[in-house]
Amino acid sequence: MVVTLFGCRKEVFVPSGGLEGWTTMTHSNSASPNYGVVFDQNKVHRIDIVLTTEEYETMQADLADLIGSTGGGGGPGGGGPGGGGPPSDLDETPVYVAADFYYNGIQ
Image 1 (cartoon, rainbow, N blue to C red):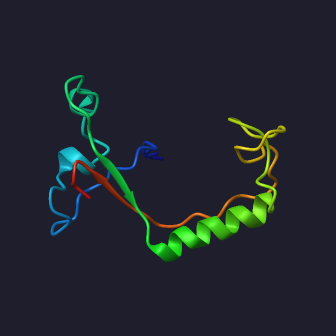
Image 2 (spheres, rainbow, N blue to C red):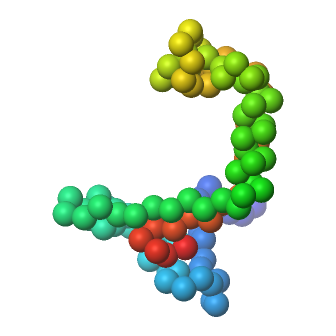
């Protein structure tokens, strides 16, 4: 009897014709992390998270439904008096929407 075991790690391949700037080095789980680029102490990196107006409105309406018109719980961390943050005891999961993510102009 021959038993073959496969690791749990899934290899991710960059499809040819992907987005501009995509390489195996930037979009593969087999690439070593380049912390020197991401955590460069001499540069502030730009990160843009882009939603459509409809996606933003969907999120805002869902938040209003979850916390009610009073604005929810307390300050940072929520849950207490004083307004400012979502309550910490929500039973429902907020809606998720797709977004475009850009790092230094690269999608």
